[in-house]
Length: 107
Image 1 (cartoon, helix red, strand yellow):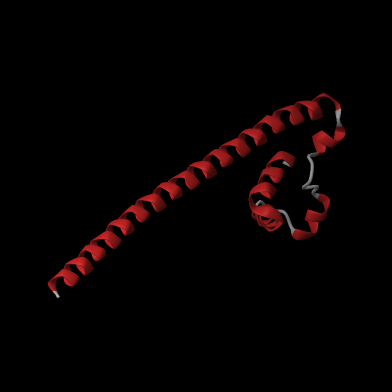
Image 2 (image 1 turned 180 degrees about the vertical axis):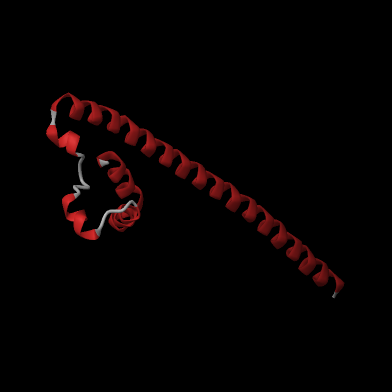
């Protein structure tokens, strides 16, 4: 329960945790008994706590790396899109300049 509550808390914030716990059948008065910051196994220490910590850290680091890679790709895509838009607008500007130039020669 502790790990899944942490994941929900990271993804949805405190209100999301409350909504998920309510959906699972927990009443709001029971939420005061649920520690959402750390897991009970982790707090107890020992081999299980160390194992959980050893498994959680790489998982969340991997998640962070994936999110950063996706964000980087998104920004690169946006840059490419804006460069293409700029090229199109430059062509439009040149086309209008040619029309003005032609109109000036026709006078």
